[in-house]
Image (cartoon, rainbow, N blue to C red; front, side, top):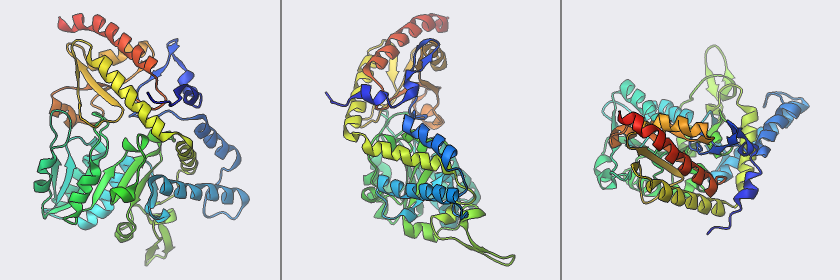
Length: 412
């Protein structure tokens, strides 16, 4: 049994004391977005109360204070994922924009007609559609690593799929709809043997385990701030410095400019080359506070607690008659997706909501995953270190009531 003190931790998150329809809130939609500790909320209020100004241009006090606070976060992110240089950290809106940035820059420059991009069968839409758009534009081919019935990638086929025409692999680290933890380090090593760069979608993994991009040897790594206790609308793209320097700009204007005349524009150095316009200053600063929170957290204890939550929930929910868990990989993070025979997932989710239990229902932006398992959607409970066993008991109890209520109606 882990010694992680979840009750003390919960005091850091004011929203966990909220009630929904008069009942204690049980929040199991962490894969969609995490809740925020008070210090992150305070950081946003503090910025707008005491430091609000545009950055990097003003010579006045507020601008310099805001610039310093903003710039400090780049180093915090660098250390958080163990990048080798601050220049390798680009602030973006989130994982989706990070992937689109790579597709629109590295992809357009390096991928042509007949070339191949390799993704996996468990990607969410944001790691499918940007590559489809690029393939349509360039005449390239999108190939897919299949997965088995447990929701694990069939890596025996990887060597065959990595052809001489493969120009990029883009792969999810942890599946948001199955919870599968992919062996990305091994996949990266295999791709690198053929000189193929790899982008890792870390939207889900960054909240559940320390990330070391140098150890992974990832060429690109993307994550979102709001899934790691930070605000929405901010995230980061990591890229190896040489790759970033060789890539063309993403958008024009503002910070990405070094000099402009009507005849010619020269571009700023990385990472600023990819950060056009006024950045999301307040949210970047609050992301830095979220990283401070992680750094002060017992991360090993938190990870062990999440494993206990997942194991307990899996045991309880799989024992309910008619329940089928979708995603039974050997290595999983805190995501439990399941379907109930004769019960519509959305109906069950709406019933649970009336009891104060927040779960996600539907396709989870992974329609190909649902097609693979032959289900229209799932009920997904996703856990964070601030969840409790008692909350899982509440989910199980109310799930039983939902089944009693909904199964006879759907059977008619």
